[in-house]
Image 1 (tube, helix red, strand yellow):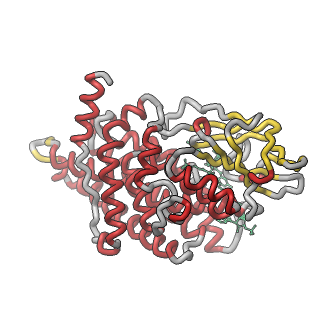
Image 2 (cartoon, protein in one colour; image 1 turned 90 degrees about the horizontal axis):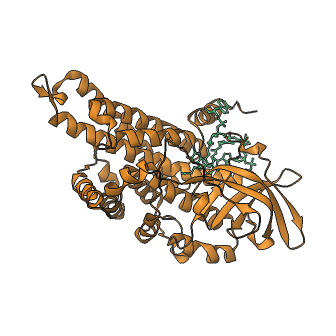
Image 3 (cartoon, helix red, strand yellow; image 1 turned 90 degrees about the vertical axis):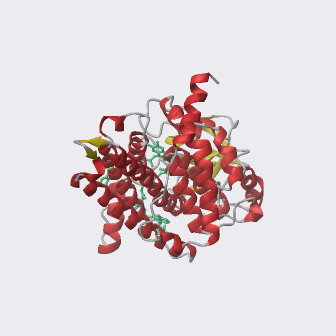
Length: 404
Ligand code: TGC
Ligand code: FAD
């Protein structure tokens, strides 16, 4: 490592003075286990993510070495059972882990969300016992990396129109098609791929790296989520053994159930990004002097900070309540949509306001707002766009379906 890089890493490690806001004493609603998990992940983010993340983002490179460390932390599949090498934690702990990871960077949270909620969860929920034993322990430690292929070049918000298809041939299924915008695909050892048969029935498959006809070109040129690697999945007559189909689900509710799990995590994760921006802005507003007084003494700055903490507090309460429902298995997909939509939008607005409070300095990599802001444009789009989630709420309250 060059001296200047190691110096800058050391400086960033020292300057991560993050203090999480808790205006409504929400910590009192958390258990000792929740607080322990939070401390472990928060400390890890300070030591391992903050010092390097600007550099990796600028270079549009994924910090792959963090996967194994996240495995050791128990951040991959935290709420899946211990008997498969997973954390066996509750849904609030899972949410808190996502919050702390996204406080570091949305791309780092994405690495964990995809592995845990979109790869391990479908194998756990819809896989055979053999599949669970074969893949889950290795995914939990990041010995292998997975990705989730639902979106296609011509079918994003409307996955029911997917054209990726499979047919039966002897002891295998033959897959053809293409998936687009797939987090981790270029580095993945396995891919959960959703495809339709000639009758239009959607099934999930575990496709392994090395199967002939399976390729994963990288998508370059992203201004957002630059520390996360994204690619395509191309399937050309890929022969997938019959034992690699997910036996226990048919239809679109398979992939959509996985999305519910991941969207829940994002509703917590976005709070982390918002807290990081608010914390930076609050500190800066007390330090920066203009017109002979700190920025924080101007009413307009106070308005910005007061609105930020109000919105963060509302989002924290929404996530906590959703977590208590999820622990009882009672969080509905529509409730999850509301929290994902509200909390991501809230975080994006806070990133913008916090950037404004920093003036010109706010556009530099000395502060995290621009990186969070750019990342949050993706978070607003993936796992169902802002408007798709609004229409899910609209459908839930009216009983009328805007999609059909
Ligand atoms: P629809 O007829 O409403 O539903 C089909 C079946 O699925 C059930 N269902 C759900 N089940 C569990 N969780 C959910 N969230 C569910 N939503 C629907 C539904 O009950 C039904 O079941 P059944 O038994 O009756 O068959 O389906 P639709 O085709 O009308 O679609 C509705 C719509 C638009 C809401 C859905 O397609 C949608 O959510 N679209 C958005 C697509 C999306 O979110 N894509 C995300 C791709 S993955 C990703 O972005 C990963 S980023 C990862 C990272 O890096 O962090
Ligand atoms: P479109 O569906 O074309 O939507 C374009 C615009 O039209 C949006 O504003 C949308 O809200 C609006 N729109 C669409 N339909 C309606 C409607 N009925 N009413 C009103 N407005 C509508 N997918 C995966 O499967 N796996 C992954 O790992 C994954 N990772 C991703 C990583 C990144 C960095 C990104 C950017 C995306 C990722 N995605 C992944 C894909 C993501 O889920 C899709 O981008 C998203 O679902 C939107 O699809 P689309 O981009 O095709 O936009």
